[in-house]
Length: 214
Image (cartoon, rainbow, N blue to C red; front, top):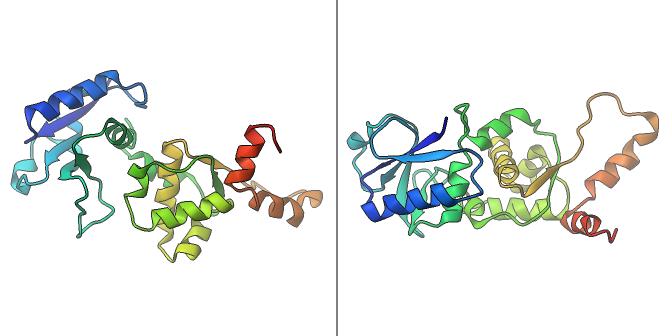
C-alpha cells in the first residue's frame, strides 16, 4: 500500500510538480501517492498557513514549505521543504518516512549503538548538511576517520542524540558505511592493533580500496 503525501494551501502548479516527481522518481524508497484530501503520512503546508488550518487532513508528519534560504529560528533542525521545489530534496524528505511510522533517521538512531563507528563513502548532500549548522563540521570529521555518535558528540560539543540523528541521515542517503561492531570479547590476537587500524580508515582510504589501489 503506497504512502500518502498530502498537500494543503499549495498552488496547483506545485501540486502538479509534486505528482510528477513522485510518479517519475526512481530513487524513492517506498511507493508514494499525492492527495489533496485524504489522511496522509506526510503533509506539506504553505509556511504562512495558520496553525488552526493544519488540523485536516490527519497527518503523521507536517512539513511547512518555506522560501529557499529562509531558516526556522525557533527550531533550526525542524523539517522544512524549500521552494522552488527540487526533486532531490523532496525525495530525500520522503525517504525519511517509513511505513512503520518512524522517520528513517530516528529508526537508525534507535538501532545503532552510540559507540558504533562509521565512515563516509561520499560527501553528504546539501539537503542533509543544511539541516543543522554543525553537520558540515561533523561530516568533515567523518571524512578523516571512522567516528561514532559518542566521539562526534565530543568533537562537535553537541548532544549525542543529534549526532546519532546525523549518522542516521547519512545512512539513509547511502553516504555512510558502518564498521563491524564488537559483539563479545575480542580474540587475543585482534586487540588494540586491529582496533587502531580500523579507526584510521578515512574517506580517502575507503575510496582507494574500492578502486583497487590499496
